[in-house]
Amino acid sequence: MKITRGYKTELDLNNKQVTACLQHAGAARFAYNWGRRRYQEAYETGCKTPTAISLHKELNALKRTDFPWMYDVSKCAMQEALRNLEKAFKHFIRKCQLKRMGQWKGKLGYPRLKSRKKGIGSFRLTGSIHVTDKSIQLPRLGTLRLKEKGEKKKYIPTSGVKILSATVSEQAGRWFVSVQVEEEGVDPVPATGEALGVDLGIKTLASTSDGRTIENPKALRKSLKKLKRLSRRHSRKQERSQNRKKAAHKLARLHARIAHIRSDALHKATAQIVVKTKPCDERPSVIVIEDLNVSGMLKNRKLSRAISDVGFYEFRRQLEYKAEYAGSSVKVVSRWYPSSKTCSSCGWVDADQTLADRTFICHECGMVLDRDLNAALNLAASA
Image 1 (cartoon, rainbow, N blue to C red):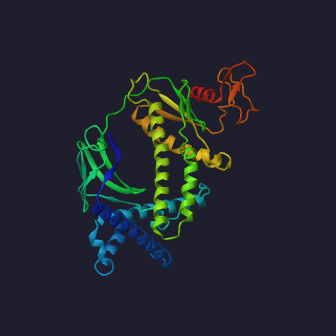
Image 2 (tube, rainbow, N blue to C red):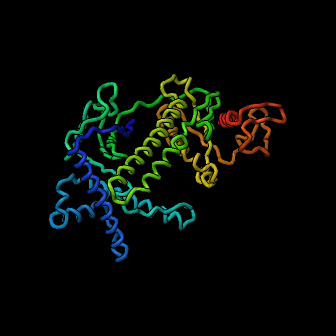
Image 3 (tube, rainbow, N blue to C red):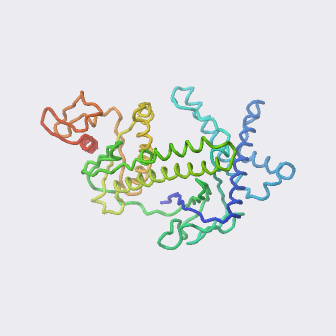
């Protein structure tokens, strides 16, 4: 079977290459905002909704007279930005239709203008892309060195794959490239192990029915004091000064570090649960999790910050695609199932249990067990 997968790694750019990447990111941002204005003009005048192809043709016609600086960057940056805009409006229209039918309750997500104040952004390139162990060759940008080099640290496959696109992005002064490839994958051998229940939490990231607990790094909580200090320093600097830019860069680096710690912990946790490298009889055939109401949980002002620091949705997303590669299936139990209040031994339900009760005590059979482990056992039994 064919698998579409992305490989992301850091770039090692010189000053000239950084300038070229900034030009491409600015061109993509300009094309996106320009196309958004054209969509609004077409709507106000009652004209037909433009497409990404028609907008790109119109933009090419204006290059020579209005935007001659666009000849310095690759045409793919503007073309892919307009395609992203077209997808954004399609999703917006789809949500509007669902809203009329009463099937959508969230925000509609009207495409917003891209501002450089919120970040430099990214741009996507297609066409002739070549990857080696030490570098990557992109259209108009030439050969860019990779930060991680050599066979032991090779993240992007160089043979046996079809390269579809490359997305260059910036985060806190560091440049990354994400290469989307299409590769041939072997059909996974179906797992035949026992069902595994996974209960997510705040104190511990996950508790499994086989007795394992995965610690929560609490990346935001551990860096909160430093984050507040850097935020105060940034707000007290004079606007549009160089010191304010330096303070913003330090603040962005800390935010990026927190995000990287959280992402690393989630990838390690889901990999431990799926155990793709083990034999089929040792891999869980079914992984059971709860359908958590995260948006409702975030309304709790006392726990909203801690819940956001875990990343429940990202955990579920990673678990689903990794389980598919490992030959396992993921079962999602209803959010109304009282997994924490039900005795995993006799089935008695403790209706008076509160969130502060971390130990489950059964008044019927006398079983005493950790609350999260008891919930994980109930989830595994529901498989």
